[in-house]
Image 1: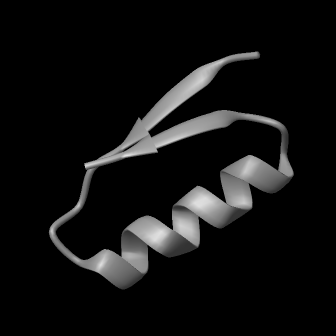
Image 2 (image 1 turned 30 degrees about the vertical axis):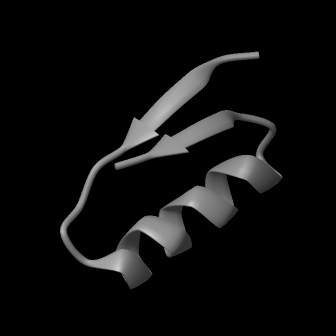
Length: 31
């Protein structure tokens, strides 16, 4: 499983990308 780091200063943007990528099967880390 690929890991993806999502970095943004806006929490709602991090959550949006995180949820979409998790649904696609990625292991997501946010910062």
